[in-house]
Length: 204
Ligand code: HEM
Image (cartoon, rainbow, N blue to C red; front, side, top):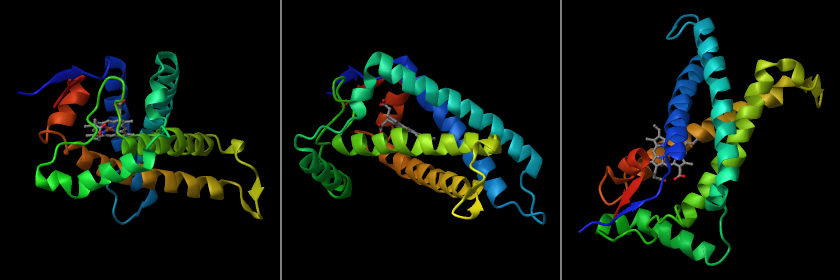
């Protein structure tokens, strides 16, 4: 018999799916801008730029909401890796993903309302949400208002490091998204985690 436990309030779920949709729109329009080729126009440059700007501003709004709501509700604490037994818990979790899952083992640290994330999720979600996302958003905003960038950095145009950082942060987020979707399938059933992210109820 499976147990049901309510984990995710509505604001997290609405933020999560808004964020996911915006990141998908931004990756497609961003790839179209980055690899723009006059011979092969998938999305016309001006249209891709407009979509990217609007979705980027919406992502800044969604992220601000996420950051403020996390502080107000105290949910930010979920993301902080707790030192006690951290390495051991990560090793156990990685072993589960790499071996246990293919041998019918049950997840070593299933989500509970108090501990929503296992140790690996904590460190990865913390890195993505509190380090890479701010870099992505700040560099994106500077790109939109280039006067904010320094005139030059080490003799190069000041927008150069902004462009490199924006591109690298985007690569990290897109790579994270693929791994994240795969790991999303590793629940009790393939659909378990996706259902939880929609209904808020976790089944195990
Ligand atoms: C189509 C794209 C996406 C899908 C299908 C998806 C799916 C999921 C699923 C199933 C979960 C719950 C299980 C788990 O925690 O692993 C989850 C949680 C989460 N996802 Fe995603 N995700 C997507 C995109 C993203 C993106 C782009 C980000 C961040 C840049 C993100 C950040 C998070 C965070 C922080 C959580 C934990 C939320 C919480 O429990 O408080 N997701 N996602």
